Image 1 (cartoon, rainbow, N blue to C red):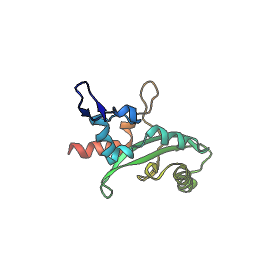
Image 2: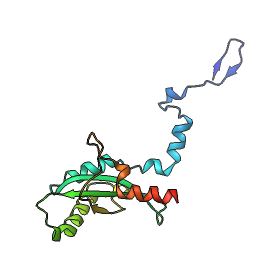
Image 3: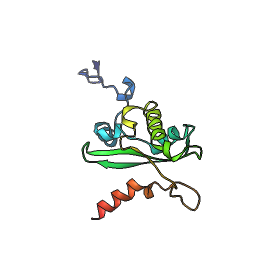
Length: 145
């Protein structure tokens, strides 16, 4: 309490910044309450983990809708080194899946699966076209029906 010029007592107000807390905007409060905000997965981050495996030549990650979990889940696509035989492909893909899942948090695991792609869709500048990966094309087709 403090005395103002008229002699009455007034409560002292402190700004939120003086207490060490920043005021939240409406958008920040909304994002803090939205569960999907906390569980966002960066495709580039998962692609880097996939590419760190010695048997992976190319990698791409996109999202696929999972009706059981009622959310989008990450799906991975890889192209393997030439030294991997076709007969060993399934075993190597499982090994790579375990490799990735051991290095990322639960929400970033490849819950949609990991698949082999012989060629990746690329733009004229060489960038990966995630929208042209099979899972994204399937989702676009379903949305148009």
